[in-house]
Each structure stands twice: as structure tokens, then as C-alpha cells.
Image (cartoon, rainbow, N blue to C red; front, side, top):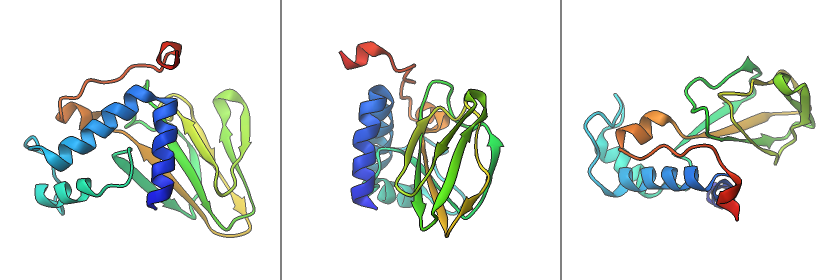
Length: 163
């Protein structure tokens, strides 16, 4: 997983430099600095989260795994209106289409495909696939994490970031 995440992190830094920097700062803070009260879950305490963050292989603080499931047309309501999510397709399937109905667009979505999109603004879906198992690794940054760690929210990516 680590070599793929390193490549995605470079792509993330190229596509959205300020969000990449903020997400990397969040992971660093969680792994190496004192956490604010409330960071933790019912099954993971602060010590476990700190240890996980120190060896986390991605610049994205959140990764969800979707395996062999259709994804009905939806928006990612927990995302931020100005940020990108990355979707990484993997598996043994032979045919699949990633649909963006707001753009009237269907993209071929074969294993190895990476899609960077604003999932809070653009509805998206994968209804069916043929020829084997399908996995999607959805990479994201939650606004609540940056807020809890007092990290400024990056805004829209602009051309000036690349000049």
C-alpha cells in the first residue's frame, strides 16, 4: 500500500497544494503533538490514534474501502465544497463506468484509474461492473479534523499556485 500512497500523495500535492499541506499538517499534529480533547473514538483512544498517525502512509487523513458494491448517485456530504477527494479503482473486473450526471459524462473506470473530484459538488456513481471483483479506495479530508486541530481551511485551487 505504501508505494501507491506515496504516488497518490505526489499527485495530491500537484493537484491541490494547499489542501495537501493542510492534510499533511493534520497527520503530523495527530502523530507528534498533543491532541485536542475529543479526538478519539469509542474503539480507539488517543494513544492508538497517535501510533497509527506516525506510520500512516498517505497524505490523506481518511481512506474508505468500498468493495464489490454499487454506488448510487450521491454527493459526499461530509466533504468540503472547495476540496478534492481521490478515488482509486482496483480489482480484477474488466469493464466499469464512473458516471458524473451533472456533467453528462461517463468515464471508463478500470483498475488503476485515479479520479480526483469534488464529491461534495459533483454527483457521482458506479452502478455496475463486469468481469470480477471491484474495489474503490476513496481518499478524503474531513473539515471537522482540520477544525479540531486549528488548521486553516484551504480555499479553491487557483492558477497562481502553479506559476
